[in-house]
Length: 301
Image (cartoon, rainbow, N blue to C red; front, side, top):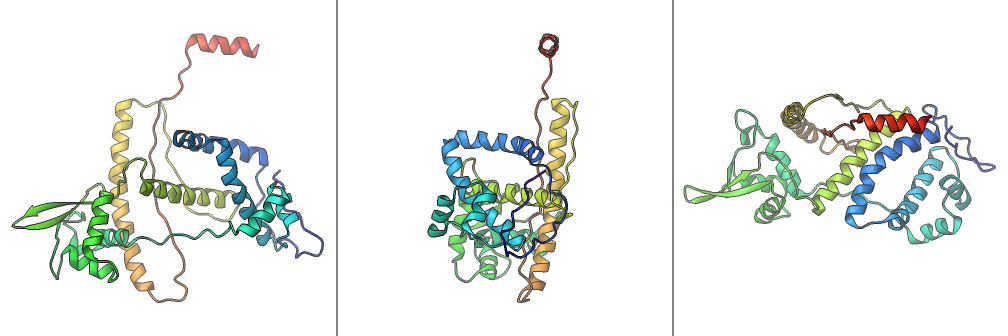
């Protein structure tokens, strides 16, 4: 079974767990599957085991602090060290360095503008897709949309950011510039800082959902559809279907989230965030040849 947090003498009794903790070895085996593609990314970027270990150390300390807090225990160096497995001298260094202050970034004005564009019925066509807008104008223009989102950033600056991100393009029409949205939405360049930030946010929230469900804190939606024994042509069709389904779901979610955001504006309890996503993956299955099967039987014998 997974190790339970220790209670120092005189500490507040631990709060009852939401559910039985999974066995540590089972969790480690599952995490090995999760970590394999992440390690591929680390190695491809030039980050080795020592750098990963250095980054994980403060994370172990922070999560140990949160776990002790959940159970009403004092955050002593010894308690943190015992639970996290990190040496006490490193815990002391962490306290002095203030490494636990991780601040979530707010959504950028450019991202807010694009989301409002997608959600506004007057700025979309009959199919719900965002339509091209004249760059300048007081009504139904990119300039007007930008000024609705923020008065602190000039519309030209926001346009430059959207162009850099590949969210829009510029086309000359009837003697003026029109801002044309990218039908694929936000598709940052491979290896870009924007894609790295999206990767971290998306995978982290997916993991939070799955872990919360495992620990009995849910249930939150975390489902997938799995199929095997398919040809490359079939998976190509399913990949295209997944994209179409996502476009429809994305538009509906943005529209409703924008409506609720406006209705909640100014409320004291409007302090929660959400993320809704989807993913698609395919790969060739490992096919065992007759020779390989025979070798496996000989090894087993």
